[in-house]
Image (cartoon, rainbow, N blue to C red; front, side, top):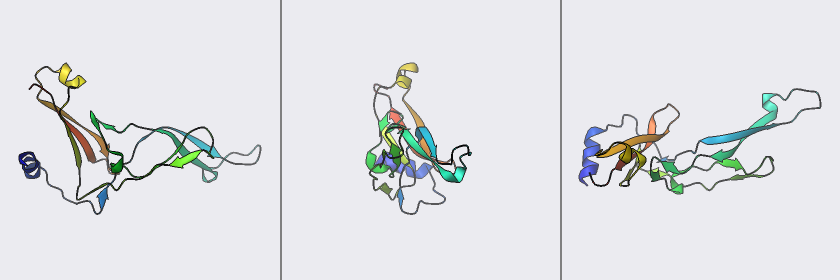
Length: 141
């Protein structure tokens, strides 16, 4: 409760999110398929891009619950017929920013002896504003 009060006193939301905050996984590798007659150039409108691999469910050292993600389509191989859509989560209602708080030993804790904590953002919205972050408290400090 005290930590929540601390955050509420320091952060002000100017334009609250309407509905739920749903995160999107970033595509790490993709492929573009298209169709055209032999000898013709494939036009942008005659092709589509599909993701082969998304980033992990990690935000810093925190594991993000799959229920916080929106559904996305990925292709398991190099065939446009082998694509699936992931299950979508409900997101998080009543939130504008998701902060995953952890208390684990991390490479950053080891790198800076005596560091009480470290933080990083991991997801941004369409305007580049952080919407998800990890705040990790280093053990023993």
